[in-house]
Image (tube, rainbow, N blue to C red; front, side, top):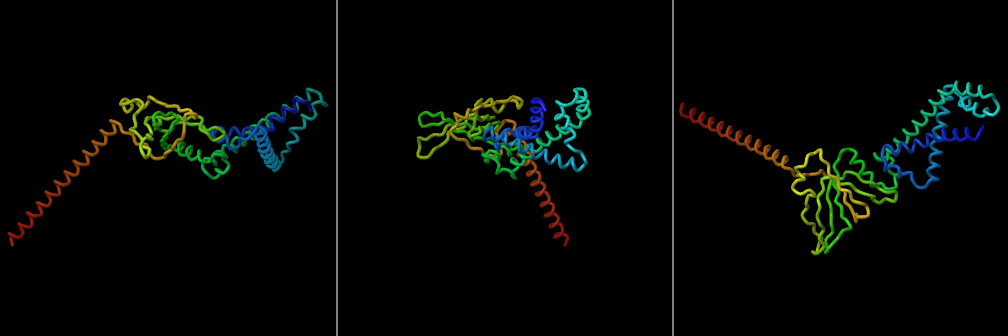
Length: 286
């Protein structure tokens, strides 16, 4: 078998392992770091996964009476048979070969996605190097609102600049450090160290009074580089945002409740008055 066919065969055999990594990275990009240590270890894991998938495939196909050697044999006879005969033999087997290649690659990708999902859900969390970050990812993926309080490295006169905003996106480097954080609906304030205990100043929206009236379709992102972050607090509590529309709706609901209470009180007074009249009428007749 020629070097070209040997190379092609090796690549095909490694496809399930390569698609295993693709499956992990496709489901969640940060899940990639659970298997990242060095190029050699990644190649070793890819080979291990590929061998395992091929062995299972061979066992399953053998159970149905299909021998893999029948499809590989023409490659070893390439230098000993006529080219036309070789092409004819390959063409007869090309569809089953393609089906096998695509099937094993799909199994590898599915296995990678399953591993990533297991890490996200918790059962395989022990495989992750930085386990805490997946609590944040999982809450964000489920539609939860995570508020981030960022203390920056910018300081002046015993005051440190801080930001508060809804966590929109972030990226974790392989060594566990935040490369950047993207916040939405942001406010800025300061941590004041002049007093005996650290105190925070009033939080001011980045867009001032116009921020609450901005259309929902208009986005505002604040990107903070990891080198400018001293520390950060992730709060999974629901985001409470005061808006003019919200205040109007709240006042309307309060007015409805108040009117309902007044009507009920008036009705109760009227019913009580009617009962009193009925009692006095009975006493007078007796």
